[in-house]
Image (cartoon, rainbow, N blue to C red):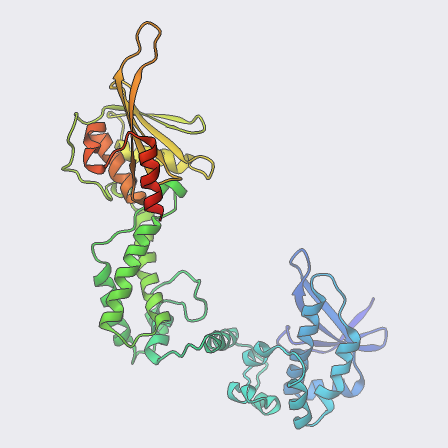
Length: 420
């Protein structure tokens, strides 16, 4: 069907007047289809409507704002309700300002479009839409609309930000979207407020100094330890609230999020050997001499051999094996010293570990006799300590990491007490 453009503005998103088979129509793009391609809608208009659209930017934008909810209602494949769209033409384009204001109090409309195109926000909030559009521009400022919606969401939650609170959120890049990975953006802050912002940040940095967030290979190669994060977050939150009691909760959270995110990034970027030193006690070797050869296995038949002659430590190699193999249905991993007949089995699903030692070798076709003892583990930090101690000194070096229970029922009672 031939389509000629009759009138368009410099901003291609604002609806365009076209002519199809000698009929004037308004054409606009809105929403997306099932393939995420933009949808285009048209509906008929009259000559008087065209004339207003051409000469009056404010009315043109108001009509766009009123029609967009109809496009949203059409969804990914439905048709535009043309009768409803046509019914908006006279009231929006040809009525007096008071009638237009009254109409916009009754119908749904897209507020963000008007804010992005320079509408006076205070007048919009009072329902004076025609007067608000006296400052309208053909160019669009998407960030202005995003800021407006962020402020509205906070107002709906009853949150009121002081200038310092807003500056902290802008410094971390989280003023508009709280889920955004925080960054340091001093250029986004009013220079008059920047010194106050930096004092709050310095307090947070001091609170987090000396604390680290390790990786959690149980959840993959890039995952970090949730408990480490929570400990650092609590320390930073407490310090900031103590030193700066007037800072709002949202601003405190964005500061601790920044500090924790940076610590987690450092953990991901650190060499594996450095990361494996977290939570270990190099002086607590105890027991037998350092291991020289170990075997790592999982619950799905995976196996990896480690030797002291290799390039990395046993814990580093083991945790890499875990990161590559761990899954929701693969949460039991074993480290075994076959030569000495001892090993440990880690149960990630239960925060527990078993140490296994050979009491008597099998002879004459009889099975070997083992002693199995169970212990509870405090998250990833606890697992690191156990693995490091075993790699340094075997099962005997695990004595300080007990208590160890040989009775399964006693162990299960201990697990339940911890869970309670």
